Image (cartoon, rainbow, N blue to C red; front, side, top):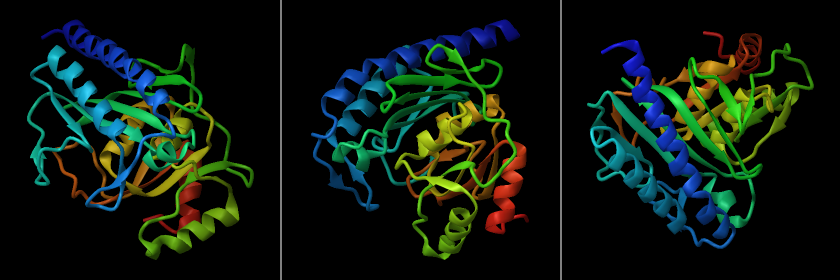
Length: 271
């Protein structure tokens, strides 16, 4: 297969994925603040809108590309690991920030990632707060709506804005204290938006201890093109060889190279 044919296959998938995500925004906005959440087995929340968006995206993608695998936090058929066997697969988080969504807090996102051989090659993120589709990937630019964007190039300083959520595992609480002492902190309630905002230059960096692959797969594709380095402190997720709801939490620091070096120094994770 020629490089042109390879690009065509990816371009077709990107176009279909953007249409599919944009088709779900009416439902997302209509039910915002009204959907009733329930607690799942892992202690996180889900609403009927999460499930509906997952189903709609899966139907659109698998109808167009039946050989592709589709993975979603909300539609996993089993708790057991599912091997990645197809060249192209998709990782979906139908609403990243479900707590926000159910409570009428606007920082939520639809996240859909295209992976080739287990590595993110394009990400589509619908930013509900700004009503903008953020999308991009290696060799294809990063776009905030129609505007080409890049990560912030500035060196880290005391005014740098760092996306950070309190760690679930309290053993990492001291790292949070160090970040608060050294930077301006933003905790938006959406890991997808934290990392996507670093890619488009709204945040200077991100530290997170709580992620699963569906939280960050789409934003990782954005970062790979935007000049954001992601250093995994534990459990690097890519290339993804299997999809499992039981995966260990992903920990990382992200930003331009100087920012990542500083974040690792501050939290004491230089090795």
